Image (cartoon, rainbow, N blue to C red; front, side, top):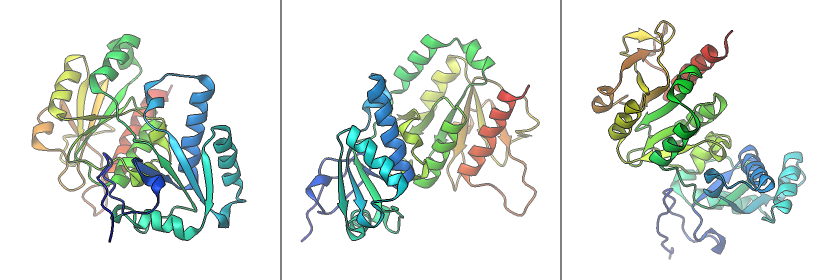
Amino acid sequence: MKENRKNTQNNLNIDKIDDELDDLASFVYGKNSVLEYLTKQNSENDTQTSNELALNWRIQKIFVSSEIINDAKISKIKHLAQKLKILLVECSKFKLDRMLSSSKNYSNENHQGIVALITTINTLDFHDFFDDLLKKYDVSDLAKNKACVIMLDSVEDPRNLGAIIRTCEATSTICAIIPRHRSASINAISIKASAGAMAYFPLIEVTNLKSSLDYLKKIGFWVTGLSGKGSESIYEAKLAFPMVLVLGSEGKGISRLISQECDFMLNIPISGQCESLNVSVAASVFLYEIWRQKTQP
């Protein structure tokens, strides 16, 4: 008979596997993701920083398949784990398969022979984050630097969430704002899709997207929605900064309530038969257009 466990905030519902899974919120799996998280954790320890992001997660234990124990990247992971006094357990590939396949959310996922157990990844407080931002920068400075915040209106696929966070981190986007409900989970799938970027990037959950937009507009942000029905192309429009870039869900796009809050509705030109791009691809196209404008002479 299976032992029931209560869901964590990351929506894991794991049957009895090992005692070490108790009170842990999520997995990180895949060589690159685990190495990124260890590197970040080591960097925070070396600098003795008290940065809020540093306190939101900790790798507790690492399981490595005996089949890849001598892999070069695994050697780096072993070195960092030893330095950080994190227990690294050599085990069978079967055990790793069982750890992931025990939850329907992770079936058929490729762990690459390594799984790390982490504490809960907590998101940041909306008002605290922007209060701190405005203490460091004037709105005019944010506009000059073409600062961009991304807001995801009910993106449902955790792979899309992770891929968007990965691009946000790569393009110096300020933060990502997601709704606390009706949104993809922050779980092992989104973590792996982010290639470890969730270890670095500020992620904010809010209960009300409209109220958050009202506040951001009040402090000087312009709100740009991305939609196939947008009136101008992103390549022709004069982009207004600092910007909140809003992207909608995979099926329905931006909701009517949130679209009414947008100052601009733009589109990405498409010449093929497809009516729209995947939301994570659309985010990448737009964020790199902002990056191009920011970095061009």
